[in-house]
Each structure stands twice: as structure tokens, then as C-alpha cells.
Image 1 (cartoon, rainbow, N blue to C red):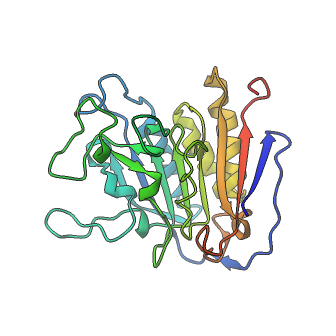
Image 2: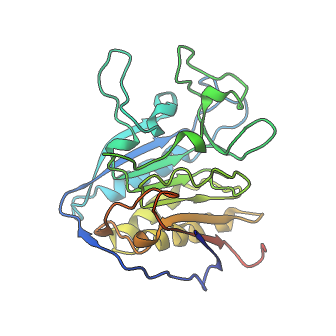
Length: 282
């Protein structure tokens, strides 16, 4: 049974698990998807995210610095090129049949854009895209158009031969527990890092997150600390960082990490950490 842990920053609880360690000898492949300009390219009329692309650029620039020699950015899909299929598992192709790199092809995936929680309009939590994975390019003004959203039920990251180990989601509500299927992304992935409430996109958060990672801090702590430093000061409401992690992967770093976990619900044991950013928001 999955264990749930609630912690305020400063009393964050580390979970120690028996872990088979693999040392990373090859460069980590990174895939980044950011959507900043929702409005002018056919999306929601007033929902641009001014710092989304900058967050992705800052993360990429810091991770691939030559002095670390640890990472390579395989793809960076921005705005109208950020299709839903960028975050879908399975073989993805371009319209001409050529390979389209997506989440299965990278070790570390980062998404920055709008996130929606389950509601009367949506059957499940979703990452929001304005580009449809169909013959229609854009979703127009209706953010609840099914083709413009990647639902939790459409993820199942890390399965089969997929390389994916970690996914960081800078979006609101994708890990909101009101959706009974919010754990479905755990299909062999090590960790999913995101938020179960509203959050604010701050470009410097991507840079600080990468700096912590390249310094050797564990991935969970890096995500939480960077959000605490950069996001919390901009928030005027409760913000909860939610991290789903295979028990064997809780102490993963980008230099040393566990073997591939079994899927959630099929032998894999996962833990959940919910960290409130700031004691003033209980």
C-alpha cells in the first residue's frame, strides 16, 4: 500500500529504502516541453505564462554546462511545437513518418504549462496544450477540449523500454488527489515531481533546480528547495509540492539512482510526499 507523508519544509522526512544502485556513466538525456504563448497561437485568450519558456531554457542551460558533463538536451518543444504527443508514451512520428522524440526517449522530462484538475468539465487531471494531436492544430478558446489535454489516464510513463526515470511538472494541480487516477503515471518511472494545488511559474526556479541537481543533491530535495526559494515568495495562497516516488528511488540523484521500478499496482511500492510551502498556509 502506498504510504503518504505530509511535511512542512524544514521538517521534511527522508525515506530510506533498500536500493540497488546504478552509477550513471552516460549523459542523461533531457526532454523539455514548455508553453508560454497560449493566446496568440490559438489558445486560451488570457492564459499566457510569461516565464514558462524561460524556466525551461534556464534548466537546460544549467544542466548541460560543460563543466558537469552530465546531461544533453535531446529536444525542447516550445509553444506551437509542444504537442500533446510530446508527453505521451509509445512510438511517436511526424506527419512524414519520421521519428518524433518524446518522453519515452529521455531520462529526465520537464513540462511547464497549465495544469487542470478533475472537474465537471474534465474526467481527470490534465496537462493543458493548445495544440491538438489531430488534423486540427489548435483548441481555440475552449481549454476543456479533450484533444488539447493530456489526462492522467493517458500517461503511464516509464513502461517497457522507455528510458524515462524522472518527470518534473511545473503546472497546477496535475497531482491533485481528487483525481483517483493521479498515480497512473507510475508505470516504471522513478519519480513524478509536481504540485497538487495552484502554483506560480518563476523562471529562476528552473535554474536553481538544476543547480541543486548538478551539485549532487537528491532530486526530491532539489525540487522542493528550489520551489521554496523561488515560488513561495510569489504565492499569496497555499501551495503544495507533491512528489510520487518509487520506494527504492527516493534518494535518487542524477549521478546515482536506483534500478527500474515495477509499475504502481503491479508490484511496485511507491511513496507520496506532500510538502506545504510556508507554514502560513495550512
